[in-house]
Amino acid sequence: MLTFLPTRTEGRAVVLVGIDFSDTSRKALDTARAIARTQTEPELHLVHVLPTPGPVGPNEPTGLIETALTASLDRARDELDRLASEVLGDPGVRVGGHVRIGVPDHELVQAAVDLDADLIVIGTHGRTGLGRLLLGSVAEQVVRRAPCAVLTVKADTAALAPEVLPPCTECLATQRATKGKTLWCPQHAQKHPRAHVWHESPAGFGVGSQSFRPGE
Image (tube, rainbow, N blue to C red; front, side, top):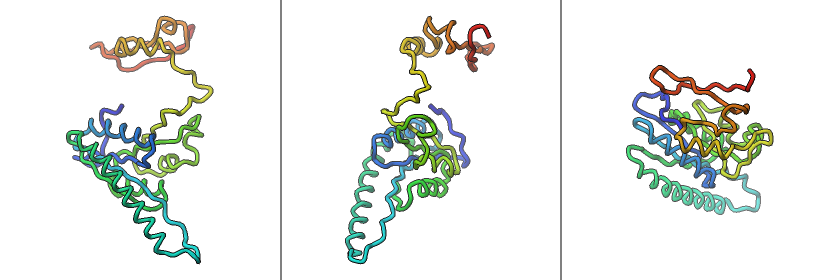
């Protein structure tokens, strides 16, 4: 988790999070809140984008389209207000809600430009593999076009790529029990490609880690 965020505007740390009211965007909001709480003078902006209404057919009354759009805007504002009220409980965090109409990736990037954002946090679809995770999605376009750093948050149900091994449960248990002082279980500590060794500073603080394979 980020404990600091390099900012471009002194005195502000502006975090923008894309909200589509899905479980994944809620996870993105939780991540953005955790980052904002670590900053000095943080601003957290919740941005929801409604799609541009399609063209009106010759037999479609314009009034119905406008009524439907107004209803969608009202629902989005109410939901953003509800989410924003939760964030208001975070000490020191200023929060704003924004509803825009247009193409989602374009409007998110434009909002980041308009607000001079330092970071965009956005959820992604849980497709397998990094390429398929982003390819063709709103997140991909935001990453490509954003004027600032972008943090993508995967869905809880996202599967690992087939070539990525699942974590060792014993290693995870060791890390938690020792608060990270010991990274690997006895099986993986010496005779496994995952083995690592800490580099220590004179004061005894870990400053990095080095991967190696036995025999190298």
